[in-house]
Length: 236
Image 1 (cartoon, helix red, strand yellow):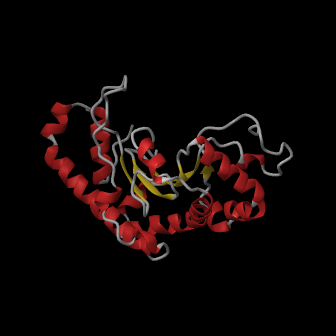
Image 2 (cartoon, rainbow, N blue to C red):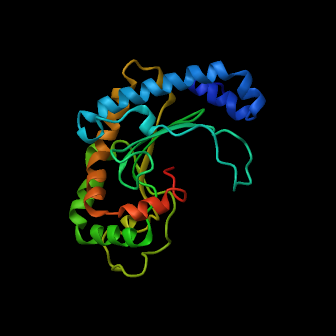
């Protein structure tokens, strides 16, 4: 693996190679420098997104950024740190189950995502029925030129056939196959060296907003259900 030439990815590359507490403690100053740099990026990104989605304008980086420390209590993988930095910009917070804007920086790639990573069964059924009932609207959203030029992927896991309860002759079965309604794509690592990086990333997120709007209009989770799911579901 080649070593990245930007500070954030260089640190993550080293962290993945030396994922232990001794190395992390010895390089804590480097981590603090990278953490501050990532916070500034997210702060600028919130401002850029707010120009087309004012609902996020009040957020701070703390509302959006995930910890780098892994929860290893129930995991066979006992490495203490994540190999990426991630932030989910959503008006309801980073643990919300509604459409938002996700940034993940890894040692050798940048991933952007939107939509929702997971929904409880009743809400998932409601969303799929909304797609069936509003098929033309959803198809226009997914095929919009601004979105398609990003070469997006809808979902990460898929059913092999249309789930039970939906029309087998549905004209766009690829919209019913996903087990999650997150849309994702990658950007080249060179983006991190651009002066207008937040603007570049936000311009991609702007193409996702119509999908997020569709999800927000057709998904409703009550507050008690959201609270009970907090320790179960994490976005990406």
